[in-house]
Length: 105
Image (cartoon, rainbow, N blue to C red):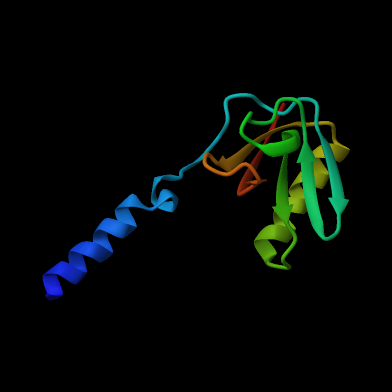
């Protein structure tokens, strides 16, 4: 009985779509992009955004963690200096959430 329960638990974890999702750096850099703050969420919008991201935008959660604050500050600094961005998003979500940023010259 214990083996059966363990098998069911492992099978459900392996078949979960969350397990199949992966974060990645999209191929296209954001050369034309804007940064907006709306209702406590920061959005990076660009025509070069990954095609699976709704409304050609990705969000930076503003939950108050140091990581989220740093992402927003990094994007704000890059925008002020006119830099292009590379970004990390999940490949399974249409509401894309930025989990990493890098400037490009």
